[in-house]
Amino acid sequence: MRLNKSIARVDLGTALIVAAFYLRLGEASAQTDMTGMPGMTPAATPSPTPVAKSTASPTPSQKPAIKDMSGMQGMPGMKADGQSQKKGMSGMPGMGSTDGGSQMKGMAGMSDGASAPARMSAPGVFVLRPPQKWTPPPGDDRSGELLSREELKQYMQPLPDPIEESQLYSFSLFDLLEYRYNSSGPDTFVWDFVGWYGGNYNRLWVKTEGRQALSQGSRGEGDLQLLYGRLISPFWDFQIGARALTNLGNGGLQHNARTYAVIGFQGLAPGNFDVEPAIYISDRGEVSGEITVSADLYLTQRVILQPRFQGEVTIQGDPRFQTGEGGTQIDLGVRLRYDIRREIQPYIGVSWLRSFGANARLAREAGDTYDTIALVAGLQLWW
Image (cartoon, rainbow, N blue to C red; front, side):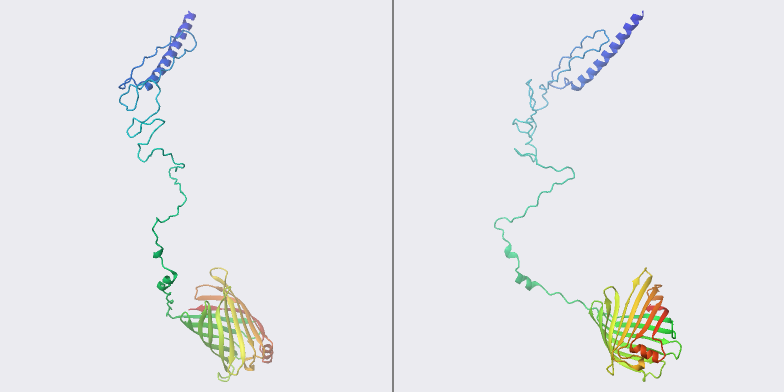
């Protein structure tokens, strides 16, 4: 009884395997079967090999042969012989009938014997060939159309002169307007003003500077200059004019005044240094010189540090102004400004005033100080 059940199970498994095999073989035959097409000869269906009732897997039969398509009459170019044919396309419209591989000479743009290009561009990639020099065709000579150098000079016109701007401007600056708290001697009030009016090349300059003591008889001195300035190079003006120097708080103006001829320069030196050298020649032939150098060093957009130097040299002195022959005087200072507005900049700083030589001797004889250090506070104004 148990043996019969085992044999039944083996038969059932064998039947399932055979059914699966025939189902697989039927699908392959359906893919390659073209017997239903016009002109195709139906092929015999191979019979399956009997399978023995055993546990071993059945041996599949041979695969169906490739269908013969020579009988198809709907496709031009197909031959009816049973031999293997080459993949000729001569029967297709536009294709040649010569043997030897695929022929595409009937396609548009193809010529006989033309080979594929040696290098083809990928999609989006262009192959650039080396540039070719253009050569004119024979008989095309255009050298006669070119102008010679002499002919070009005849047609060339000189460049017009630059248009000189006639607009007039003005500028005024109080570089110093300060109170000095001196270490020795009376406190003083100091000013230094410069202004001009004119155009880009010709200007009328006005300058004045001086100091006034605030005690001990209020002694001081000041000058006034009226100059003509001419622009001689970028950032530099040549100046010539007159200067009046007077003592303040010590007698009448006409008894303590002196006039000078002035020759000087004013400009911006490399490093953004404002330089003002000048030579003074008095109405008595006394010669003296003065130079002022300053620079604006921007610590921030609003905080500016200004070192400033002013020196005077006297060749022939005048005792009424406490200047001796060969005497000198320097005024060296450093000021820190804050830019409230461009036109208004308060500052604080320190200044050292020192006389040398004959100037120091005359100051001692008059009871004045010749060496002092001062704390300064003031405003720089311009408009």
